[in-house]
Amino acid sequence: MHYATGKLKSKGIADIVNRLRQNVSAGDRLISIRGEDTGCYGLNTGTNICELLEKVCEVPGDYKIILHDFNPQWILRYYLRLKEILSCNIDRFDRITVPLQSGSQRVLEAMNRPYPIDEVTKCLLDYRRTLPTIKLKSHFIIGFPTETDGEFEITKALVTLIRPNLASLHVYADRKNTPAYIMPQKIDWETKLRRASELENVCRTVGCSYNTLGI
Image 1 (cartoon, rainbow, N blue to C red):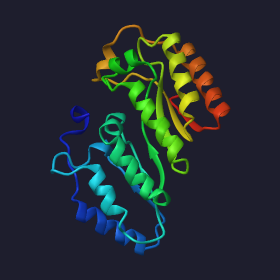
Image 2: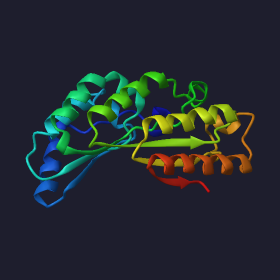
Image 3: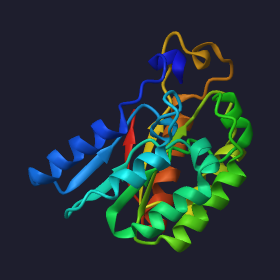
Image 4: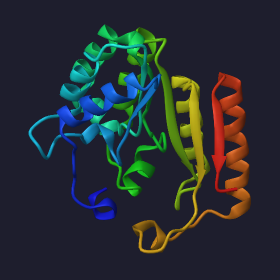
């Protein structure tokens, strides 16, 4: 991630809390906490996302929090502590976005996202069971180079299993100066369209609202 976005920079907890107080006083009722990778907040300053959330939840008012782009590796690192924070403040959180991208371990490694998808899935299923009012959003990439039909079926099965409330379906497109740009075995357009349609059908079946990007 840092190759694309630069070194990690985290605003101070006090600054974020003060901004939250201002927004709540101004009447905002839906508060977004976001970054290029929200889950790694504070690792450059000796703190972490859980410490931030604990302080944020102390701010009084009628508002809900959206956690954007909480990458799966941080779900694993902070699993129990994050679960405790969400559980103790369940009325404070609207949703969390965990961009899974694929259900295939091999495809994730090809994407340079080598988190153990089975372990992440277990954590998310527990969150879905114990924190049912907090919505889950995820992102999925369709037609990443070298992805086979069988590997795409694994992604479909993952969506069926975790039943996210919301999903962004991204049809892969080449971007220059990325490792994927020079990868062989690109997926043809017709196959990507077919897979997109299939994943849309899965989303509709499980009651997941979705938007498809790249078509």
